[in-house]
Length: 434
Image (cartoon, rainbow, N blue to C red; front, side, top):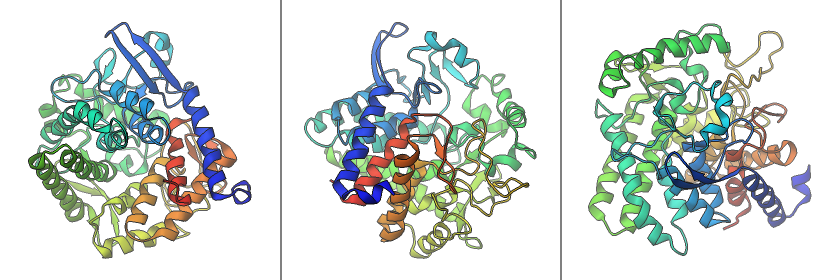
């Protein structure tokens, strides 16, 4: 295998060159006439996703911070330039919308304005801010952007947590970034997972929001699709903790203490409400009755990231991650376990990869990055190294694709997909590169 023939430093350096080329290729830079603002960001994929997506940009900034801090900072500045006074940040900014009107006909997007979406994505903005405030000039960047980032988390706390349990809710499936993941099937009323059925289910759940003028109180009261998602809230808890660190660095201990309290509350609710001792996994809460969505997916493993996860829960998650019949695929970590009926094709037992149905089996680099980090935090370095190594082999062999077959490693979905470059950070951990 190519990776075995390289020295540790050479392997990282070779990947770094590939990431540079990818991010140069996918760079979008200009001035938007509709707002008069300059932008400079890496789009997810020029052929499929040419706009600025929220959690993608946070991942891109984290990668860029390893080798080009100015571009990393431009990425987050661009993301925040159109933030309204209430603190909200939409999941897509359509900087150059007029050039892609035909493409937009394929999107199902709720718009706050013609150029800004009205949805959220997993909230890893504090992690991105932390990454771009290291090194020279970091204190100035923190002073500039921390107030904006804090307003965003205050918006999530104020608007998306009406029951005040520390868990924020998504109001439509794509707000988790996991569009068609099987754990939502039954809640959405999907029995035959096809694109047409998902479109109809999405419309049943989300369509009425237009009549409610997308008012959050009314959307929550309608109870069409209200999910306290484990992946979203694990990332939320981690970012509340990171935001506390940023406030400490800025010399604001009161703000830091408040964010630590919020992080503790979110973590306590994840552990108390979402963990199922019978299976040793975490599940989402659905609807006002907070029904557990008892389908194992990669998000069931995500709380391994939490630094204060109890040892018995860590042990249980590690067993699932290391189980060759579940998540320990040849190219881990599959988005649904290998033994999950909703993952397999009835005919031959192989996954069916449909670029129009996402997160129904293939492995993704962004969740691999989080899981490997969590494993390292809890002392399971060997398992983390396996995930890091196999993730790197995927890119070394098949390039930067949106997702990968966990059996063969074949790439699917968008080509030249930018957040897959998180593998550079995984290789840095694997190779001991600072």
